[in-house]
Amino acid sequence: MRRIVLALVLTLAADLAAAQPRPSSPARSCTANRQSVVANGAIVLGTGGYTYDRYVRDRSFCQFDEYIEPAWVPSRDTPSCFVGYRCKSGPYWDD
Picture 1 (cartoon, rainbow, N blue to C red):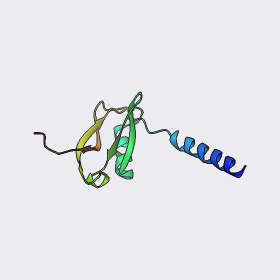
Picture 2 (cartoon, rainbow, N blue to C red):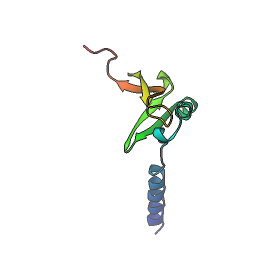
Picture 3 (cartoon, helix red, strand yellow):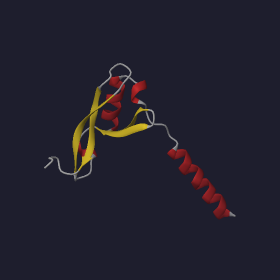
Picture 4 (cartoon, helix red, strand yellow):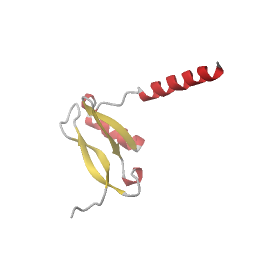
């Protein structure tokens, strides 16, 4: 019985963690979106509908084999707001 209760509690905790909402960039000002990235170092922002991406403050939030690429998102007051960078895999240069 204890195992069943423990399994149920762990399942509910995992469901609650997965259901946490992410900030929606179109609903927030450009400054608020940028400050969130700077303050947290890395953050997942919703960019409209079911789309989202991870934005970082600098290269230190990427894996060792990734490079950074400037990133812009839609915001409440600016159609194209620079919020930071996205980590990209592969070589920086294209052959």
